[in-house]
Image (cartoon, rainbow, N blue to C red; front, top):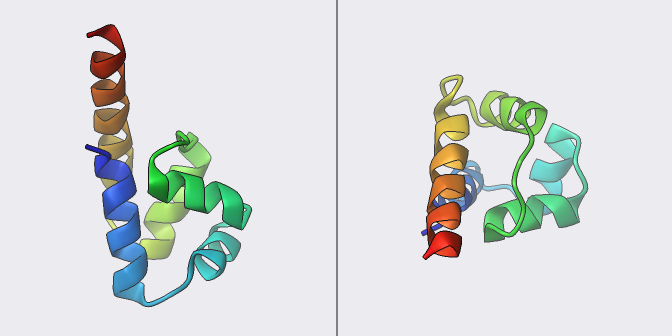
Length: 79
């Protein structure tokens, strides 16, 4: 389950913006933003901080979800 990716998509849809608009607002390419939503790319610390500010979520909220998503991926790879 891509918990970070799913939450990122939910937040974007709740804000009613496109991936291009969200990407522009946080200073990343639209293609990278789409990869984050699909769970095929790991967000860097700076990206996560900008996303948290843009979506007005508590600091550390998205970082914790990214860590959970990463942990789940590593468990799946190890299995």
